[in-house]
Image (tube, rainbow, N blue to C red; front, side, top):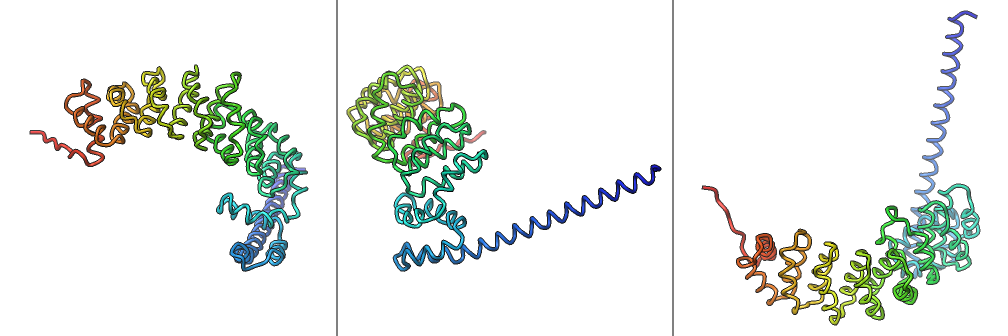
Length: 357
């Protein structure tokens, strides 16, 4: 077989393969377009009946009959609507979600080799309102894929499983991968049901700094007055992150009796803590801490100076008077500049026009 024959055979094979690949691509595109059109048509029927159901105009049986024509598309529509409506909306949609014939399938998929399938299943189960999925979701907190663990944690919170608070903290303790704020947001889904577990963590001497930091965040978000004493104790913790979150949470709870304890951290080695102290004193209307706030105007960190000035402004007339005086008489040039900036920003002092002659 000469070279020309080999080249012709090779070209023919490549041409056939190209035609085959093109045919497969076209077929996939046609199938995708067909599925998209089918789902769009389904949504055009599902959305109106769903709105009618929520307004009380359509019965549960009527709505289920429409949604049952495409259970998987119906699940997507229901989850979208549930996220839009929030917790109260999920309660209204629960009869529809629990009636979807996918519960056992989702549980089975939590054991799939595909992490994408495990992820979707962990997400779905939180909306179905079925407590029988709790053990499987607790197991999913040990999944090797962080995204699956996060989805399982969110679903456990949606299902109201307060026993999952500590397992969630352990499962998502992945520094650099999941921020403490995101973990706190998951636990906050539990609302008041998270109170007792959070108090247990805040009072446990052996709790690690990540757990304490997140627990402090949640306590502040829940305005948990029972956490004031444990949070006050954490102001002396060795971890700057714990001290920072304790200060923020005490300010969120709003008990003015903690002002002096917070002010004691006004010279903390961590500038983030000092900055939070200034913010907290403003939120707590701690008029007795004006000297400390004036001292904060000369801090080496810009954020501390800014928050000190904003806190003084938040104190009303006494703080504004102190800021006015600081614009001319503060010992530090940065303090004078920051005082002037805040007063101008709030329209109390007119900007000074500088001209170069």
